[in-house]
Length: 144
Image 1 (cartoon, rainbow, N blue to C red):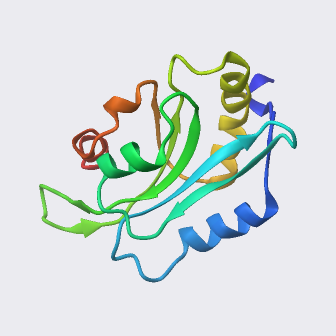
Image 2: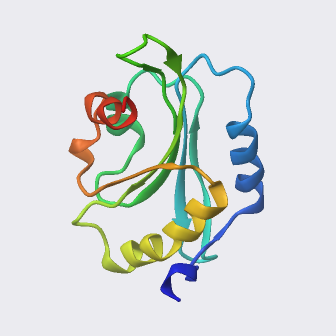
Image 3: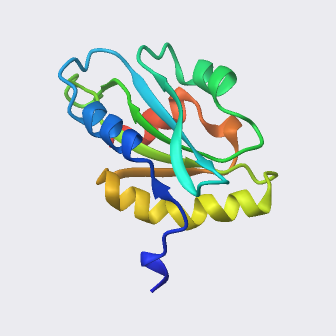
């Protein structure tokens, strides 16, 4: 039953914030919630909330650590090439750089599936290299 494994629980305040983020009415800007694991409490907690995200590249450069894993919930503008329709899909990303602390990597990996189920987001992506996380990469995943 490894699919039901839960290493870290979701912080209740963060759970409420994620629910509000999911159902917010004003979806006209790109936004993100960056989450991290608190090693002492074994909880998934808020690292940072970004309400008006300029670009993926800025977020990678300014808000995501290069040697630590992170969970990310992202609402990002997509103009669909086939219809020119605009949407703001929610996606869940697990970013786990290869050179990060193995113990920390295990805590994140062991919590990913239960967090994904709790968030109930269907667009789920994993990245092993932060440099791969670009707007082009994301749009290629979302515009399908």
